[in-house]
Image 1 (tube, helix red, strand yellow):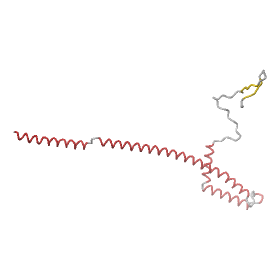
Image 2 (tube, helix red, strand yellow):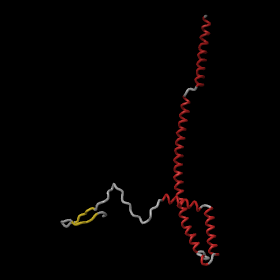
Image 3 (cartoon, one colour):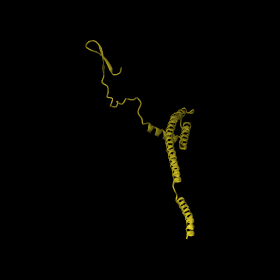
Amino acid sequence: MAGEDRSRTSNGSTALTRTPRSRLDQPKDPRRRLLPEYDPEAFGRFSERIARFLGTGRFIVWMTLIIIVWVVWNIYAPEKLRFDEYPFIFLTLMLSLQASYAAPLILLAQNRQDDRDRVTHEQDRAQNERSIADTEFLTREIAALRMGLGEVATRDWIRSELEDLVRDLDDRRAPSRAEGDENR
């Protein structure tokens, strides 16, 4: 077992003794790492800048110019100054090296963009759900107001009811007046 030693006691039996452990309420000492540490966010931003540059016309123009200068130099320069003879093996190696680094950097940049898009879509979905809930709430409120207004007396309705009552009263008074006129 880790952290335990077997030792002999005075009577000849073996006993387990524990070596002192670090405290559990204290953070562990950082481990030594073989690989250097780096900030993934900074590396991601760097890869996005490279990927953005690799996708521009400026990169294509610069790469074309460098290859043209490379080939022209190695064909027309004096023999002693040429560093890559005709099959241009070194140029092929450099282009392969550039491509081998560009592809993973582009993929890393795409993954980061996918992560940002995913977060944006989740936020949009949450906002849409809140908007739908708000709309449904407002719809229910408007429906409740309409139902309540159906039971509320409006000015025109009260006016028409009062007019009906006045007519009824006039109609009731008219026969009683006629009887009163006959009695006189």
